[in-house]
Image 1 (cartoon, one colour):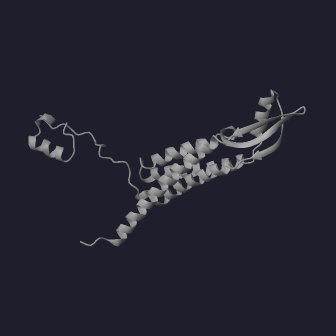
Image 2: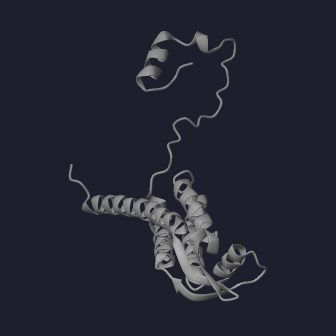
Image 3: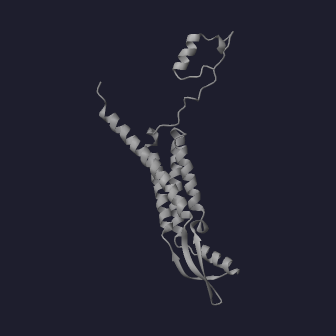
Length: 202
């Protein structure tokens, strides 16, 4: 029997899209989470002629990118636990979490509010000016991670209907007990056949 070339091509495309989505989603979440712990901004806190260096991490600037990464990671796993409409909804959530991570990272790239708050805490004052503000490239890495998450969600929306789902082999409906007897009344050969099929006759 000849194999259908179209079926082989479709299967190969499904595997490629699945692998790309898993790699993109996992890498994107990791990049966002790692970036959140890095320094996003540095400056000098200036009060009465005194200057002290202050810096803020991504989590100090905004906790939203990390939250979006965790939501996206959970959605990436959940894609394989649901089917049909549920899979579309989860895939959309994955794409949206990536988009939100991008937006929040870009907004935090030029933020000075966290630096000012840190400067005030360092100086022990309600307000403190900051000078010589410098921003690092980590917000852009965080945005890149969000982009990878969004790509994973778009792949799931486009190809997710062809991806496998978690096995339902253990999801059985309750069986009615036979009239006038129980499972113990089954014939021995039926039990052996069930074992051969990988089923638990008990």
